[in-house]
Image 1 (cartoon, rainbow over the protein chains, first blue to last red):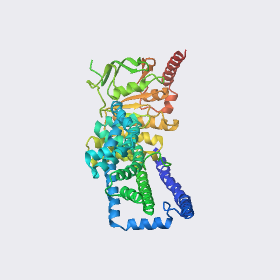
Image 2: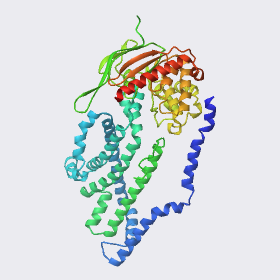
Image 3: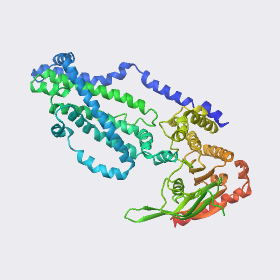
Image 4: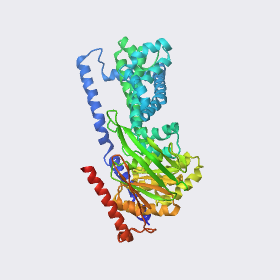
Length: 282
Length: 261
C-alpha cells in the first residue's frame, strides 16, 4: 500500500534530472558555450602573430610558417610513425602504472601496516624528477623502448598510487563489512568493493597520470633520441629549425588536450552512479 | 539448560588511547539471546552499544571474554549474521537489484535464481518498481529498505541492526518499524536492534537490554510483555506500554544526569 504512493512519486526524479541536464546543454546556442573557451586561445595566437611580425626574429616565426611546418610533419610518414610509437610507449607505461600502482595504492588505503611500509619509498621518490632517472635506466636497459616505458611508468605511478591510496582510505568501513558478512574474501574485496568504491578518486589520479605520462614521454625522448615526438622536437631545436619546434609544441599540446577531453568523457561515464562528480573544476 | 543461540560471556573491549593508555569501552558483558528473539540494545550515546553489535558481527575483535553463536566462537563475520547499518552502506555503483543480488552472487547462487530471490525481496519491501535505479536516486527510507532486502537475501539467521532508522524522518521511521515487524513476524529471525529511541525499542522488542556508559555495560534487562501483533495506535493507550516507556525514560535520564555531574 505504501508502494502505490511511491511508485507514482519517485520516477519523476530521474526525469527531472534529465530536464535539468537538457536546460544546460541545449538551453543556449553552441557558439555561446564555445566562445569563452576558444577566445583566449585566439587572443594568444593573435598576440603571437603581432609580436612575431614586429620582432622579425628567426626564433619567433609567424603562424603561417608554424602551420606549414605542422602540415609537413603530419604528411611525413616517418614522423607520424615516430609520433605514434611515442604514444604507444606512453600507453604501455600508463598501463603498467595502472596494473601496479593502483592495486598498491588501494592496498595501502586499507592496510595501515602496508602503508607504513611503502610510504618511506614514495616520499623518497617523490621529489626526484623522473626523467633524471633516464640515464640510469638507459645504462641498465639500453636506449630502446623498455627504458622509456619504464620512465613513463615511474612518472605516472605516484599520482595513480596517491589517489588510489586516498580513495581506498576514505571507503566507509560499513561497505567493507557488508561485503565481509556476505562471505567475500580479502583479494576479491579489493577488486570488487574497494576499487569501485574508490573509482572517482582513482580516475582523478588517472587524469593527472595522463599529463605526467605525456611529460615523461617527451623528456625520455629528449634524453634517448631515437624516434618519436620528443626526438622531433629537440632535434629541430638543435638544428634551429624554429617553425618545426613550435609546430611540435603545438602538436604535443593538442595531443594532451585530446587525451584529456577524451578521458574526461570516459571518467564521467564510469562514475555516473556517484553522488558527486567531484573534480569537475580541475 | 540448553545453550541459547547467542551466548556472550565476560565480554570487554578496550582501545589504545593517546599517551599509551587503554580506554575501556565495554566491560563484563553477559548476555544470551534465544533463537527468534527480538532484542533491542538501548543506551545513551557513547555507551558502546554499536561496538557490542559490531563485535557480535565479528567486524570488531573482542579484547576480553567471548561470543558464541550456536556454540561456535565468533572470530569474524559470517553470512549467518547479517548487518544493517544506519548509513545503509549500499554499493553505490550497483543498481537496487544488483545490490540485493550481490550477496547471493558472492555465495555462487546461479544468476537466474539470485535474480528471482532478489525480486521477491524487493516485492516484500515494496521496491520492485525501482529495481534498476541507483541508490543515489532513492530517498533515505527507500535506501534502507534496499539494505534490509540485501541482507535478508543471503538468509542470515541473525539480523544485526545498528540504529537502522536513525537517519530517517519520523514518518518514514514509523512506517519502516511497522514493515520490519511484519517481516520479523513472518520468518522469526533473531534480531539484535541497537537504538537510542525508547518508544522504538518498546514497540519492537521482546526484551530490551539497557546499557550504561563509562565503561559500557548492561544496566538492566527489561522484558517487554506486550501482546503481538502490535499496533502502534493501540499501544499508545496501553497501560503496560506507558509504564515501560516511562521506566526506561527515567532510567536513561538518571544515567545522563550521572554523566553530567
